Structure formats: structure tokens, C-alpha cells
Length: 195
Image (cartoon, rainbow, N blue to C red; front, side, top):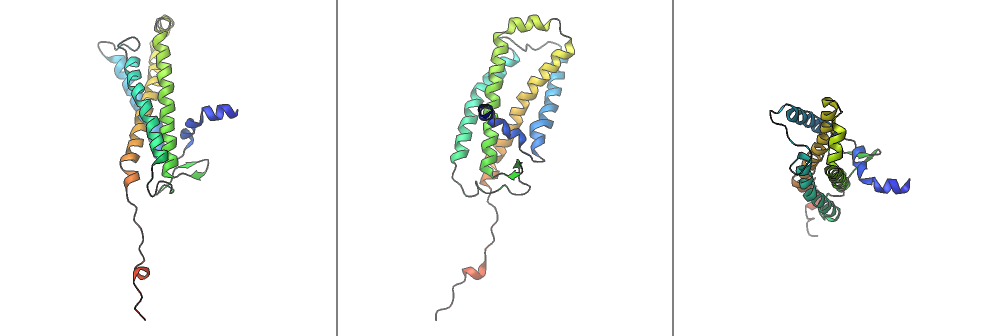
């Protein structure tokens, strides 16, 4: 059990609670996955899903690059020295297991999750590519609606990675560089008159 906890530690990002986060994790990816699956289904000329020039091959090429970027980003966030990185998040802070997270905590979990998911999806897509002839045989007897449900599930994971990446970019571009207002006590800064 301890080994599984360590293996799946990056997935604790899913347990982080915040009202806006569910939009990036679930709502927007699901919306785009359904729309894209419908577009693929009703195109006049079908898109190849598996094979050399298929959708999975295209996504795997992108994931190959992104997984290294996510690991580098996680390392950068873990060692980034800036005032405020270890403070609690302002406003309604994101929480994990009832504890408020710092910016560093949140971003480390976020990029750890993205690295895990991109590597997982890369290997899942690679397996489908390698077993494409068997997958094609299995898919012949499956109703069309079931095929496109599987396509939508795959696309959900792709859009989940993309939306979460955008959230991470927002934090890296804006939030960690934003200066928070500080209260200055003018009485404390006044010099006392010479005696």
C-alpha cells in the first residue's frame, strides 16, 4: 500500500479542492472532448484515429515534448526563490485534506500531475499504436456509439492536460509575479527627534 501511495502521489492533485479548479479539471475538458468527438464523427472524410498519421500519433508527439517540460517546471517551482511562494494562497485558498496550500505546494502538485498524466497517456497511446491491428479487429464488432465514447474519453484526458497546463501557465505568468499590497506603518518609520 505504501508503494502504491508513492507511485500515485502525483494524482493527489485531483483531491485539491477549489471552486475554480473543477472547471479546468472536469467541466471544460469534458465540454471540448464531447464537441471534438462529435466533429470527428460527422466530418465528411473520417480522421484516422490510430496509425502513422492518426490522432493518437499526433498527440503522442506533443506529449513527448510536454512531459519533459512538466518535469522541468516542477523542479523550477520547487527551487524558485521568491518572496510569497511559501505563503498561503490569497483569496479562497485551494485546500488538500482540509489544509490550505501555498503557491509552491499547489504548483508542485499541478506540474507533478501533468508530468504523470502526460507519461501515462503517452504509454497508453503508444500501446494502442503498437496493437493497432488487434484494436482494429476488436473494434469491428463494436457499435459506433461505443467507439466514439472511447474517443471522447481519450480526448477528455488530452483536454484535461491542456486545460491544466493553461492553469499552470496562468500561475507562472501572473500569480507568482504579482506583488501583494503591504501595510506600511508611517508612525514606525518616523525618526524620533534628537534629544
